[in-house]
Image 1: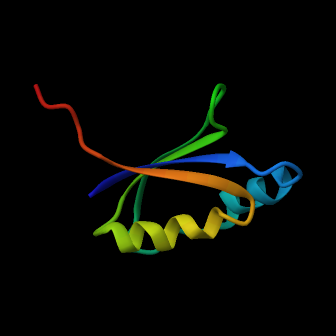
Image 2: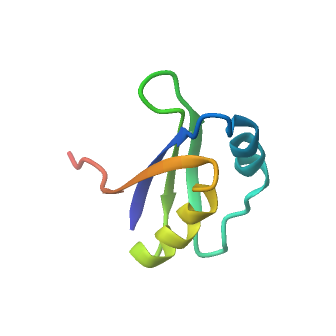
Length: 79
């Protein structure tokens, strides 16, 4: 399953989030496709594969001390 999570920095927590983005290791069952800084409505986006919603949630929870998150189940556009 393909997921996209946006991260928005909690005020005063930018250093914490930058630390987390560099130090958090994805479990073996999570495959990160892209981890991007953004200019615009959100600060970061992570695009990743996880076996199910529960595993995706466990991964995203690692960032919630420094960012508010929003996760969407994604699928490629065919054709």
